[in-house]
Amino acid sequence: MIRLTLFFLCLSFLLSSELRAQEFTRIFLDSAIQQTANNLIIRQDQSIWLGGTKVPVGENIPVAWLYHLKKDGTLHRRISIPVTGAQTWCGMTELVNGQIAMVIGQKNQSDTTENWLAIADTQSIIRFEKIPDLDEAILEDVMRTSSGKLIVSGFRAGPGPQGNNFFIAKVNPTNAETEWIFEESYAYTERVSKVIEARDGSFIFCGDIFTNGNNPIVMKLDSSGSVIWDKIIDNQWNDGSQTLAEDSSGRIWVVGESSTSAGTFFDNEITILSADGQIEWQQWTGTPGHDAAFLIYKAKGPGFWVGGYSNAGSGGTGPVGPYLMRLGPDGNSLGEKFWSLDGPSPMYDLAIDGDSVFHFCGVSNTQAYLMRRENPDLQPVFTVSTQPDRPGFSNFSWRYNPASGRFFNTSNESAELVICDITGRILIQSSGEKEINASSLPEGIFLGIETNNKGIKHTRIFRK
Image (cartoon, rainbow, N blue to C red; front, side):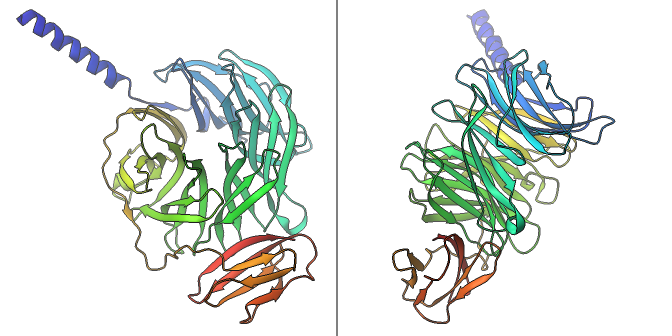
């Protein structure tokens, strides 16, 4: 009996040691002076794709890199990129056949940024083809649709004073052909940070727009890339949206960062929109230091997982490191976990398996890192911001009637409206009235900036 007990004790010890050994932190600086891990994918066999951008030793231009790793995070194979010159990593996604589709930005001899599609297996790149009609687009994300097509997104410089335009393209991975492009400019600076496919087959993206400051924007497109609705999330200071997710009821959860004042410190910003784009709930959480939410994923159980970077793990004064937060179905935090690495270590991607296994990647100082953690102990550290300068959310009071070409103030409270073109030039301005005639405006896109009786500004896009 004693021998049997000892056997099971030894077996239990070995199993617990095996589980502990599965947690790891890997650092990569491969013949480079700087290396960043931008994306990771966990394959069905638990091996890992890891990719990003690095600056090789003796060079001053970035190049893309891709590794296939064993499940313990050690190197299986470096995947060679079949081009030279300046490159940028745009993103990658796994295809239905298990191969990887990645997009790389490549400078040609005339200094034009071209975008190339690479299809790879665990041994090498199989195809490398230029994607037409995407020149000069700076792409930041790649996702696969339910039909197996690719959605690539970011921004592209527009002519004249338009600055950067929202940019999304649908690409067929079998031939690298572009099926449609959404490119739109509402203000001086716009950027798409993340696109998701909604349950109804439409596409919803979040990004940033500069109106009376940097503000998040969410827009819904139909399956052909035409606009269904858009929503600017106005705030007093500079804010940015990083990613979004859809819940089972069709509500849209948007996360990002929001400056806590006119200074350099940031809080997490969480916004829940209704299925038709109206703000239902907002909250800012964090610590006195730097806190920024970068990723959100639906949990297997109730609520969501949010990942980002924070210096709460170093008391709010040290360098930032990766963090993980669990949100309940109401949007409130159920607890967080923080990790401190050697130097500033923002997290750029996160993969989750069954609400228990978490992989993170990013850059620590000048080195790419990959972490695996299991069942982290979550503790309530973040607090909800109670700053008096935080604006509450409300619906835009003015409504545009396309049939009459008039704007109407539908609120019982006074609110002044300024209509601007995309260069910021004021075209029409109210002065106390409840109705404005805009029939003389030409066809196009305009910004409406509303200031209510509390001095809070809200912005909305109008099309005529």
